[in-house]
Length: 168
Image (tube, rainbow, N blue to C red; front, side):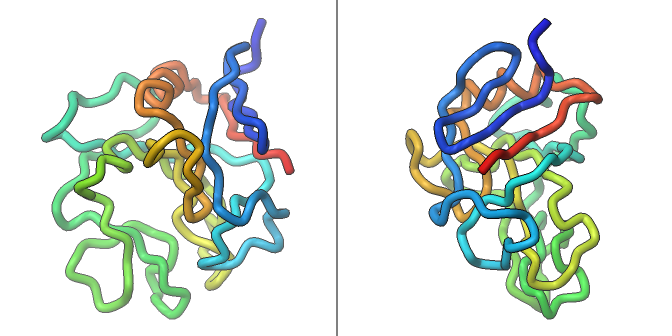
């Protein structure tokens, strides 16, 4: 039986016996302990997906076992290490720099949150998401990105025991 782990490396991803092209951070894969805010690296390790956001104005609620939350115009993600809300969801307007999750480019129309830096240690990296790519294999700021159809395919087959395994 194929593993329900999503295994990611520089070559691409494997899930349920399928090879799936993906995009990684522009700085490649680094050990999680070396990940720093803004370094453009994807942290190696074993992670879980904790939540899934979606754009209700662009698509139906996804069929997935993950907890889901619709994106609103105010949804954001705190990415300033000086912010007490660092590496967590915020509402805009916000007093610190924060990612706007509801984007015009569609990258976050489906966006899964990983538990990387779940302890919210300032500067250790925020917002490692699994989302749609800008174009095939175009580097991210540290996230893992797939074609929109591949991303939807993965998320509908995700199970509670599934893990995201990022290998250097």
